[in-house]
Image 1: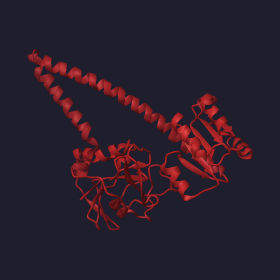
Image 2: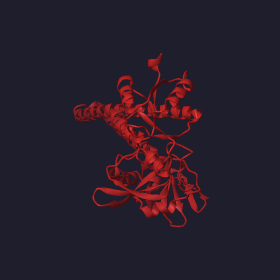
Image 3: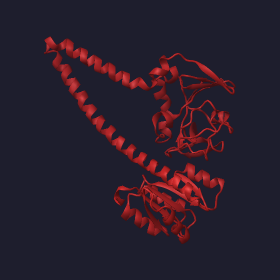
Image 4: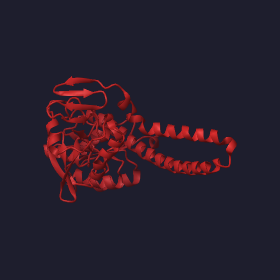
Length: 342
């Protein structure tokens, strides 16, 4: 039934494009809506939603697609946004990737085989976003339950003194629970700290099996995965990125407790324009210039510890190889942080 399908909206002031889209995309596993102007599109979003993916032309009479996407981002944050444009330049690429207004872009004239692929990828991203929200609610519920369990544990500890005959069993059980909790807390990094560490040489680097790599030129040791890959999300802002080093040091990531936030110059020194690495969205059309020992699946831009005034900071962009300044409360799914030591 139609209500069981995801809903897709295509917005373009060219009637011919909408007609072709309705013809070619008919019969797909999603329900298709079309609109020729922004007001009509907003009405569909309000009345027919939730909409999984919106594809919009950038140059329309009433409003640019990027401005339209800013409204969608606020009102319907889970909806995946894809920009269509015949007027293409490098600044637009940066805006699409780095401002977060759009997930992907499509060049005109449209290749509808590629359009289908992008819609499918957008649906997967939409489903992933819904799952993340559901998981977050589940974790919140678990936190409440955990608090109740801790309260009950304290109550049992007080009762132990009056239950001499059962004290050894209860204390032993409590010790076991605490030990299991500790193991679960450190489990993601336990293997790294206790496995024998070996290395392999990769073009001026030594890549170690503990999740680190050493730059032979500078002597610096880097994490081969970043915040986005390890935590499964981007930092909420610059401040969270700055305290992440403390968290990794407490966990002794890679067996070390002296990780720190890199400078722009240190990021720049690792830039390898020929590496062909892929970021978190694994898009081959937007390769990132990580050095070869680093793992795929990270961010496009990386926060540094360099502040600009009291409200801004600098980050390094691994697509073009340059730095930018942004507000500290700026958050985007493509911005991450990678730690260094030495």
